[in-house]
Amino acid sequence: MTQTQSVAVIGTGNMGRGLARILAAAGHDVFLGSREPVRARQLATELGAGRVQAMGNVEAASRASLLFLAYHSNDTLLDELAPVTEGKVVVDISTYHEEPPSDFNPLIQVPPFESSQERTARRLPRAHVLGAFQVTWAQLFDAPLLDGCKTPVFVLGDHAGAKAELLALIRTLPFEPVDAGGLRQARTIAAMYFLVTQLAHQYGFREHGHDWRTSVRALNTLLPPALGLAP
Image (tube, rainbow, N blue to C red):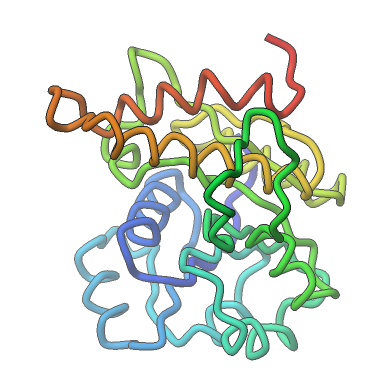
């Protein structure tokens, strides 16, 4: 197990809540950041264990060695974080991207849009920006085993040291980290996410007795070959 780290989680939605909880359970000190400190304090109290502290976004980022951005891209917040993230590992977990054209086929076309991770790297040029957890459903934080196995977390980035640090951190959690290449691969992950969610709506997964696990299984099947990973 890697040494205990000071980790910031920026965002108190379902993903932020899940990340904060499993990080604290693994023994890491979590600084939970929010633009609504009252909400963050309520969540920190709920999570308990004394390892989760609530505060504003900038303070949380300034006190941590590694940050998870658990929210959709927001240029204003990125600009606020820029002065306190120099040289730090910043993990963008968002799948947000520009809506692709209606005839876009992610199985045969190179994604034309800028990924959230590339956008974050552009806005935080002095940080080491990585991508991870983009296709991790929030429900997996409560039940991380899928079909009896750890669910993969695809880790993207262009800085080897930062990526190694994040891979080591994820190994302390109930997930299986996978080095999925450079940051540009985030476009492929976003495209595959778009495809699978589109199919879920088109074929009525829920109406036919499926749940979120169906989408997770589909992504875990499609992503490795799309990312150029060996079977």
